[in-house]
Amino acid sequence: CYILSVETSCDETAVAVIKDGKEVLSNVVASQIESHKAFGGVVPEVASRKHVETITLMLEEAVTASGISMQDLSAIAVTQGPGLVGALLVGVVAATSLALALSKPLIGTHHIAGHIYANALVADIKYPCMALVVSGGHTELVHIPREGHFEVIGRTRDDAVGEAYDKVARAIGFPYPGGPYVDRLAMASEESIDLPRSWLEPNSYDFSFSGLKSAVLNVVNQRKMRGEPPMEGAIARGFQESVVEVLVTKAIRAVKAYEVKQLLLCGGVAANRGIRAELTRVCEQEGIELLIPPFEYCTDNGAMIGAAAYLKWKHQQFNDLDMKASPQLSLEEWSVN
Ligand code: ATP
Ligand code: MG
Ligand code: FE
Image 1: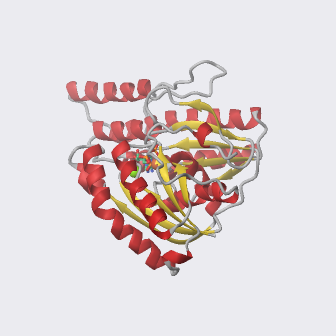
Image 2: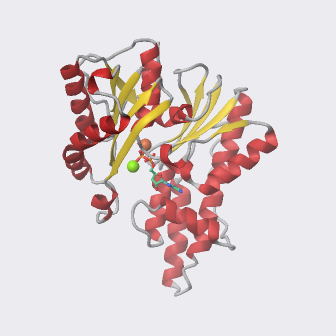
Image 3: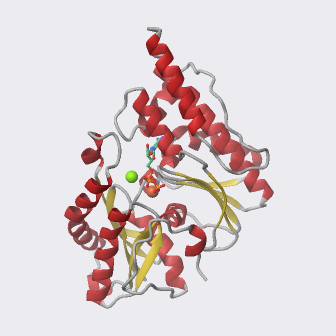
């Protein structure tokens, strides 16, 4: 089975060809970061236009690099949601047109299922498992009792982790997206300032990062007003320690409560060295099997969409060619039947 998969939910135009849900034959990603940097974040209108400019080229590149012909494809997959509606539309129109022209089945795919199943590209997932999703728009704990079935047991009530990283980065003077800069600064700093942890109710698996973000902004502004040295390193480290402690503690609690076989880390912030290191350490200590995708499958890419689409392929569950982009698509409603 050869699936061509398209991802345009945010600011990367990405296409991949995946064999049997696991083997990546090609995986091309065009990032739009340079186009959005001047605005300090993703501008939806700019994102849509860039996708339109790039999508045809990416499709051709992915097919050429895969070494197989368009006619040999088994199905066309595309991110149906969640994401920016105008950005999603470009991928959906490209994929449905291709499916129509080639008479191939169409598989609308969930972006976060893609992030989760990026792990399937490099390891065997055992069920039941728990996924900790940390990305630019999502922070979720997802219980997966069996393949392709999702129950979101906790989510952020305000900012996503990646969003908080980017806002903190901006406050201490880094360009968008600043997550990787804050990570580097935090890892290099010997000093750390004490910042609050947001635990919410004792039994809650939900998250909240806006209070922490505001605390950071207050420290930055107060130091500026008093003419004190900015201490970016200590702030970055204090922020990262707070984020990591809450994420790791809640994830481990969920793993134990649901008695799952594996913990899967995923999403763009899974590239964070602080989170990777601490989760690895605690999972080793607790005897929990941990999966983390390689860096190139953490941020948005087409290969992860192909891996998730393969779940639907196995059950021959396809979408009609009049499929709409679905900016609010939930994981539960996308679960395989
Ligand atoms: P979503 O998947 O929720 O729709 P998205 O696709 O925009 O959001 P991703 O591409 O998965 O998000 O991740 C991008 C985010 O990851 C950005 O906020 C970026 O700053 C953050 N990020 C990337 N690398 C790191 C890192 N090393 N440390 C912290 N954050 C990071
Ligand atoms: Mg992105
Ligand atoms: Fe993403």
